[in-house]
Length: 436
Image (cartoon, rainbow, N blue to C red):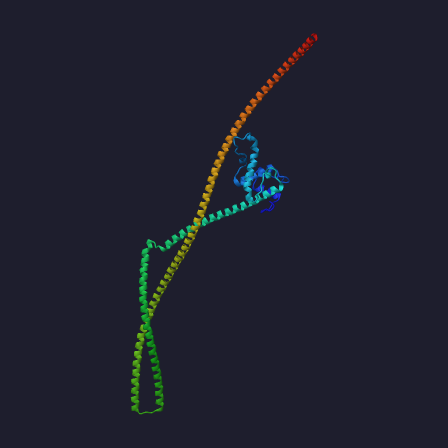
């Protein structure tokens, strides 16, 4: 006891703790500091130990007074007072090593001392506080288990709802299947037509590019011809101003010039006709470009619809991933639930076994109590019989005493009579001897 593993509390702290945590009702009000210090009262200490055992082991105080006796013991009523003390002593000897108190003796119940009771009660307080903390921890674990079970149920419900949503998104209702088939067919037709239009547009663009290159070449040739004509006109002017030729040569040159002009006009007409053809071709190309733009808008609309379908597919994939994650979480939670159920099953088995043992112990105790009560009844009956026998013996002794007194009186009277006769005989003998 010199080296304790727990702190030794003061008397006020001990009294307040046991009044608030252990004792109830009138016992808590009646339990004061004077019951412990300066000299502890044995009755108060024994009552306190009984209440501690009742709190921890559900061992009621009246059970301490019920202890079986063998039938061969004479006068068992003389041992009724010591049974409660011995029972409390045995239970405390079993309990106090848990509180790291190993040297509990019977003197701590019959004649307790202040330091010893304070150390013992301090060890019990330390154990009760530890027990309270462990109970709080167990309650916390139970609450967490309940929260985990609630979360598991919520996750399972969410997984079921997600599965239903995925089924709704992935499965097409029968009402819209025909429309979906028509849309698929229309999309395939549109894709085929767009491919054909793309091919036609590419061919037209190639033709337009070729025509544009031809128009650019012809425009370059026309500009060259115009430049040549202008240069020729200038040369003609210069020649006219410089050279005076004969009229015949002038006519020949004028005819040549007229032929050149005719050729140039014919070339200009041909170029104009080609320009008209090219303008008609350009007009057709612009019309085809407008049709291509319409087709391009339709293709853009199809692309947006395809993007939307891709987004829906991505959402479906995300939902599938979330569903897989939730399934994994559900599997993990299922494993945890199985483990917790196993732990609960083990706990329930232990509790059921403990309950069965407690029930058996209760039945044994009840049988024991009934046997003890029957023994007590037998003892009381025997006590009454012994009391009746004692009364009869007292009556007989009184009667014998009265007879003895009567006999003594009669004997005393007879002895007195005999003594008188003896005295008379002696006197007669003396007289006789004197006469002789």
